Image (cartoon, rainbow, N blue to C red; front, side):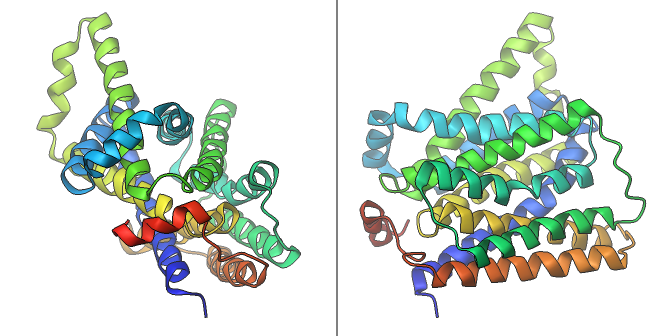
Length: 320
């Protein structure tokens, strides 16, 4: 059996996938009434407020973040800035199902980057289960009712860039977890996301003479609900859960859990929207679950797969 630390990492990765599974739906809801840049600005406004109230790393943590800001900026550039920018604009030209299918390739991208950057060694069995989960994602979305790939080339490229950004974040966060706690990484990521997207939204509205319109979305209940979900849960909570998991398990192994979000999206569509689920989609979901479980178990058997970076071990003592 895995040690308690690894069990918690699995639970965190699974929880993150569960939340992300619903995020595409809320992004599409918000896009019905608002501009993508305004959505991102409000998303991280909500995330940063929640981070300050519930995930503040303390004065010592803030000092540590300030002293190492140059090391953390590349992480934030990948996630959330690049990831959410590519994803949100990509969803203008692709359906949530198409985006989910492309996003399913993240484990493969992460595996390759982790091998190149972190020198993570992935056994053949773990690699096969990872590919099984990716194939399951493709099968799941291809088997959905009325599944037809209608995305434009531009939309596909934007979602692919989003997937690469997430893979890069997985690898870089794994490295930085040796020096920073999950709470410190999460606070910096959401804070810089708020500043970056907020400034861009203000500049755009100021240049077009529509600055008062920036406050207009606050009168829409559906927009506020979408922002609460996307900001607090899908930005703040998932980034903390991901950072926590990456501080305890390899990037290649953690990324496979992201495929579970496709299963959640399928279940949400069937239970909430009444979508029909075909046999191919069910087989894809089963392949995803089998791939995730198999990759996790195969990873444990490889040498050093459950190890925590030496300099990250003190994190467990402060509740992070």
